[in-house]
Length: 146
Image 1 (spheres, rainbow, N blue to C red):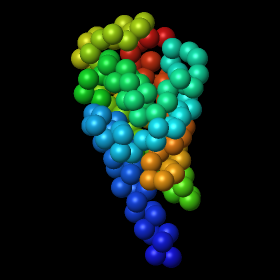
Image 2: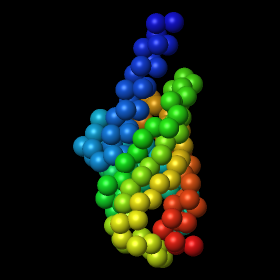
Image 3: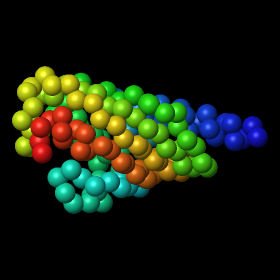
Image 4: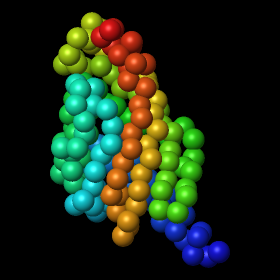
């Protein structure tokens, strides 16, 4: 049972670093994201996410995602669910719209809040796969982009 608790603690520490990465600590990526990292999500501009690979690809995508919301902050809404090497967590993101989102009619300074769920696979102490489900409709409605 000690091994299970140690593994859960390690995964929670890794998840804390993941949250800090999304909240702007880009330098954490190489320490927690595998070179073989793969993202699985529907991209807002269309297409699949197969081109987003490794720590460098993830950081680029995070920076692109944050561009319209420079102060975007993610918080954990529901504690992580852990099953072996998988963990899943429900989050809320809040940020101030700074412009540049295609089709958005919201005024600059509009505060936007949306939610999502990350499911992550860990191997050898790093994230190797990431399944993202976020409430894009909620975000688009607040940006008046529909």
